[in-house]
Length: 125
Image (tube, rainbow, N blue to C red):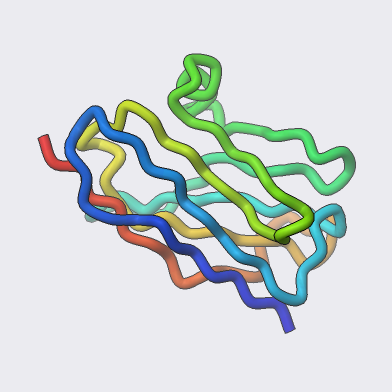
């Protein structure tokens, strides 16, 4: 049984940084993709970034690609700890939302099957 436990959210001032963590139980990194999603207040949940199962490459949703290049958003994993991370630097109020980690059951799956409970990030201006 796969369980994902997200943590690391909180209330921070704009310009600060956070590192979100997602501890994965019953899931082996490399078996299938695992990633982060964000749901802003009043909006639908959307993908942010994921790590591929095939080679561990990080992929960012187009909307967040520029942030990744600037180093403002970084997804990473520690296979030894079976943990996924999302580092967000120079936080902006628009980063506010609930961040979820999710994993696919199979590499070829089109959707994510396992979801964590989410961790709230609130950025004050």
